[in-house]
Length: 109
Length: 362
Image (cartoon, rainbow over all chains, first blue to last red; front, side):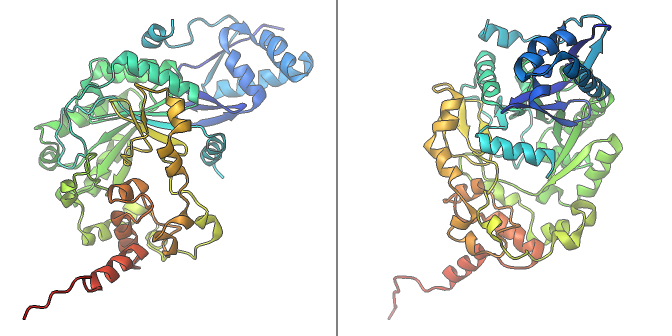
């Protein structure tokens, strides 16, 4: 199995609301509501952790599910979001996915 | 129920302020004759203060962030603020007159992932638009910016505030929006100035012209449905909330003052002295706003328009009672349907009553 790496697009807005996450694409204003499990994957999608790591360390640990069951679902979820352009998938780690935050960094070093 | 409605309902249940409107300045490079603001700087928040507020808003769960003014781009650090907001993953909407947006700015807004830019256009005719903004060539500069923003793939909404000076130009502005591939929104509401001064209300559209707008299918869609008599009021309507102000939305001024809404100048706290969440959760004023239910409105609860009226509690507050009728909304309901509102009937009755003190001249 080839490792897959996932990273949130810079062109989205998102916020956790309760256990779920709202995501909006800046390019077409499409709105998404991610479930609790999808929220865990989304939050871990920093481009550095592989999808299998995310599934093993986060999804399986938090939701009591086997990796061989969770991974195909997680991959299908990632591919669906990638089709909408709000998540990137790559065979290699994806660098620098987040925007820089000069002011925020100054306030909260 | 749409996804948006579901989110609003969920935010309401969780007590989350889903939307915040933050004016980063009241200064402006235009002097629009209907504007409700004073443009002097009385000590606006610094970029670092705003960054701190933005972090608090993100922690509170705010998703939709409208950055406006005044004209936000008169601040030299405007892009720092937008960058900070985007780094905190807000869905950012900008309200601007766009005259300071050139190629470099348009490109930067796109790369930052700003979701939407709302731009005020008063007329397709320069002499009308520029007379309202009181800035020569402002229409040309605004339209040039819209062209650039669209070229860079940004979503642009043209906001067309209708008043006496431009009442015949909505069709022209709508055509401009179509030509640019921009969205178009029409707003016939002129509000009192934020200090309560009502002199700008003289610019409101006369009833006959507002009636023409409300009966124009190009502007309102299905006229028959839009202007239909209100349906009977049911229990859901009577239990209903007036709007999102103070429930899932609020407004923050450039000086850090928190209000239920930009049109609702009831001071609820100041983020320079208190944490935002302490204000959001603990303000007695916000609690007062949240306690309003349609069935508890002394006049409007008996009105046949209760379920369809756009009654703005902020405008009502500026008239003296947040639970009272808003004259402008009463007029809109009447002009739309031809049926007088409870507020109008009350005023009619009051004006027909003899004075309490009668003086008889011999």
